[in-house]
Amino acid sequence: MTATAPPWPRLRNIGSVQLLTQLGTELGLTVPQCLQGTGLDVMALADGQARVEAAQELQVVSNLLAGLPGQPLLGLLAGRRYQLSRYGIWGYALLSSASLGEALEMGLRYLDLTFAFCRIHAREDASGRWLVIDDRWIEPSLRRFLLLRDSAATARIQRELTGLRQPFKSVRLTLPAPPDALLNAYTEAYGCTPQFDAAETLLELDPALLARGLPGDNPAIRQACEQQCHQLLQRYRARDGLAGRVRELLLDGGATLPDMPTVAARLHLTERTLRRRLDGERTSFRQLQEETREALAEELLRVPGLSLEEVAQRLGYGEVSNFVHAFRRWKGMTPRQFCRSARA
Image (tube, rainbow, N blue to C red; front, top):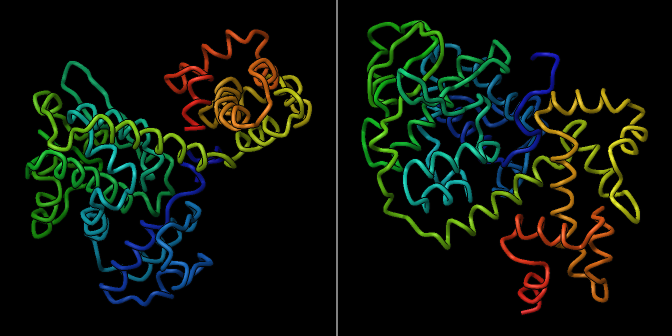
């Protein structure tokens, strides 16, 4: 791994570990072989709501590669198993989207609720519209497997949403071309024969498909799913790295939310160093402060006898109107409307 913190959250649902273990046992490994070095056992696998550390899933991948060295298609075999139902609320959010383009936007916004280790983002340039599958943060020994797994899983999701055998116009992989005898497996996984030895791994999007409506379009369900995705993502990120420590200090700040100089001093860092290290974790003090304010606002508004002015002050707002404006941006309603709905 690189010296900087990896871009994925430390915690994730156990579903992917379950799937990988199932694949390993089907190919001849035992459950203990699949889980060696993870601290997990059969009982842990039985809890579908459990969370595991990303490092534990990476250890399972390492175990599969060590135990199944004669399986060049292992990443593809794994990726094709990641149906939308595996992703819980994230999958339902995509299925209830109005269009494929909206589902794509939703999926990327909450990518950290998936099992992907590759970073995935959309790009549009003169040559077309693409999904970029970026594997640079992955340990080299695991990179091929996870690049194939994550890109094949993306194709599986796109196929489920569109109902099309070929969900992408074209596919480019940074990997060398496989032997001819294995080429058909790639075509089956992606719906088309990839171009190999590419500079980047790219999945080409069809603009006409992005505008197509989805059969599960349901605004009410979509809104509820997105809200749950947002809350779940906050919980997953809550204790990651320096950002997690900053959140803890913000939540434990006493009568009012501490400012950046106060937090930096408690961490024995300069403000500049704190800013730089948070930037390295792809966040900022302002973003963490905003997320903390949103979470605390709901809790404080439920406290009997606490006035709106006191809540605003506790969250660091000099004026109640500023708090009301922020709360409306977060929740689409005023604090008083929220309180009435909470009591209903």
